[in-house]
Each structure stands twice: as structure tokens, then as C-alpha cells.
Image 1 (cartoon, one colour):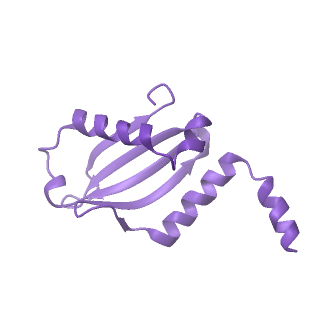
Image 2 (image 1 turned 90 degrees about the vertical axis):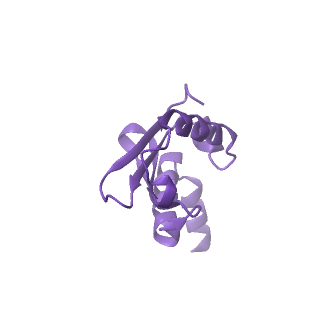
Length: 120
């Protein structure tokens, strides 16, 4: 039985793995505080666009309009480029999307950053 499960896992595509890992991470860890100002609410794999999509909530000082969207994009892009955890997804040409919502104003989207292979 264990061998059958192992063999099935070996045949899992990267897309199936991404969907599974995003679902498992969300169920096990979310909401996951990243810092005092940022909480990872969930991760989703969007098969149609081949996008790993992260959803965050901003609180405190980060939950203001004083943040510079260009600076936030540049900082996140640098993090994506340097991330070893994303290596398999980047090598496969997945898109990576980071959406940040306000905690103070529920439903208000503060940033939506999409990185494609040409970006990283």
C-alpha cells in the first residue's frame, strides 16, 4: 500500500503538486503572521493561468495609503528572484501573484502584484 502511494506521488505533475501544496499550506498554517504588519491569509494555485496566488492582509502602519506601490513591487520582485522555495515554480515558468488587502477596510485591495517569467 505504501509503495502504491509513493508511486502515485512520483507521477504527480508540477501543477498538481502546486495545487496540493497551496491547499495544504493554507489549511495547516493560515492565517500565518509574516510580520507585525502582514498576515498570509491563503495560497491558491490557479490552473488556467498557471499562477501561484498569495493573499495577504495588511495591518498597522502597512495598512495605509502612505505605502509606495512601486517600491513594494520592487521589493517583492527582489524577494521572488532570491527565493529558493519558489525555484521549481520559477523554472517551470509559473506566474506568481501577491494580493494585499486592508484589515482596516475589509475588501479593499491595497496592492496586486503579478510577476511573470519575464519579470524574474
